[in-house]
Image (cartoon, rainbow, N blue to C red; front, top):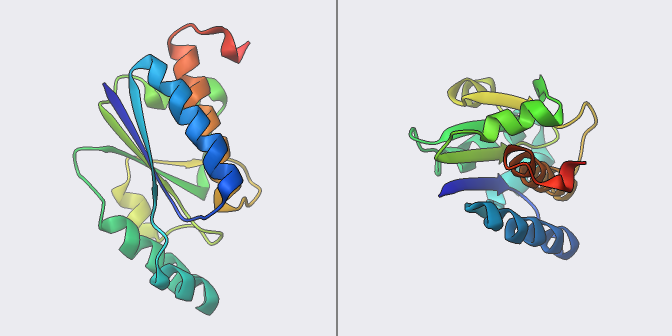
Length: 153
């Protein structure tokens, strides 16, 4: 079984519903997708203060769940731009993939260097809710491509 974990910061019933649907759909490919809300007071306070504090708060939250054995992907504005086929390649032949959704200011450079890959969903800035929906859909689409499912077409 492949395990995909998405760490995010958001509270939104609509995005929860959509992401849970993609989680259900991707399970048909033997993939267990976990959506883990990492929201905490430190992140809320950091976002109010400044860019440096915001990035530091994300790093502190994410490092608590950081595992060396996972393939770690940071979503950040400075990351690589991939098309859907390139994104699907990330999902290929990995036992556990962990995605970290950064804030509007991105993530600290030290944290980014600890990740295996940095990806940008867009040059636009998305809310966590939208980023989580886009990421969940791309995870599903990627596994459809890898399994020759017609969803992509």
